Amino acid sequence: MPDSVEVGVMAVLSAKHAIGAAVEAARWAPSVHNTQPWTFSISGEEISLRADPDRKLRVSDASGRELLISCGAALYTLRTAMRCEGFEPVVRILPDPDRPSLLATLRPGTEAYPDESIKLLAGEIERRRTHRAGFADMPVPDNLIERLSRAATGEGATLTPVRSPEAVRVIALLTQAAQGVQAQDRRFSLEMIRWGRPPGSRRKDGVPARGYPRRPVHTDPDFPQRDYSWRHDWGSQADQRTATSVGVVALLTTPGDSRQEWIDAGQALQHVLLHASAYGASAAFHTQALEMGPLREFLRHELCSDEYPQMIMRLGITFDDKESVRRPLSEIVE
Image 1 (cartoon, rainbow, N blue to C red):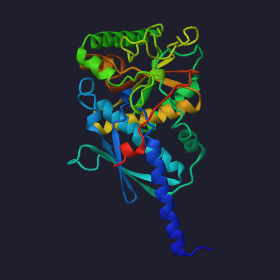
Image 2 (image 1 turned 90 degrees about the vertical axis):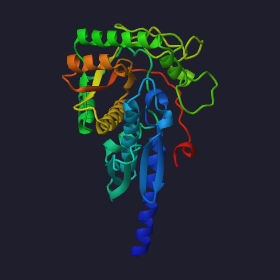
Image 3 (image 1 turned 120 degrees about the vertical axis):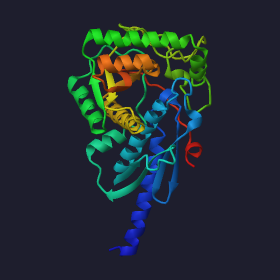
Image 4 (image 1 turned 180 degrees about the vertical axis):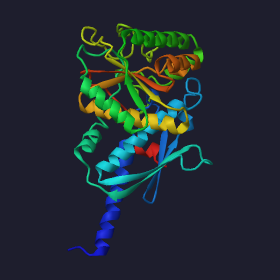
């Protein structure tokens, strides 16, 4: 039998492996425009997650809300990967008020054998994709929506499917209005264009040409997507015959609107996305109306029971095999 020293060495090596696996997984988290606005540092057996201010959207996300939601998704990915490696993570969120860019620290705690649900979620980390068009005309099972809502609740947020056709139409109209206003604002347009990648681009961030449709795919009611191609003949050719369904519109909300709750919303979002992906569902995001204060407040009071809307999404079925890109570890690990 191995002696106590050997057992201790094996435990340290196992923890280091879990740390490396967690950081590798976290780079696959979703982020607004695939900006990947995070960095990680490792000290001993502790991972620090920091916001990268150079990747903040200074026009559409002046408060940093979407940046912190993105980083919250990375934090949930760290937690899931570490659990899959056999450790219960010990997490501290916003541990130092004097260092606002330090969003969380995480280290391996007690050993814990991962159950099947954790393995299921971890298996979707690299497979999950954001959808940017209509969905196939196939229903998302109600019991899956219920499980997704429970997943969000477990992370401190609320996922509410919008069942009223009138409410869906209102959200679509608000999205259209915000998109129309932003399209007329040169600052918004230039900021978004920065993250749309042309065919053949070697950049490992932003939205690659195969990740967005060449022509707008209209749904009924219409939920416009970002125009990443911007007057260019870029993007993938969507199948107009089978990919025009709205899917299930859902609102992700939190009771308050603090930095902590933005991070919670990101963790809830990634939990929902990984669970949905495991059962064949994808999500399309619509943040246009949430980037305009008056429209976000209208949503909050009229459709969110005074909770703060953090994400508008559509959930549905798609058979697209999209490309996704991520920066190498050498660029994100300090």
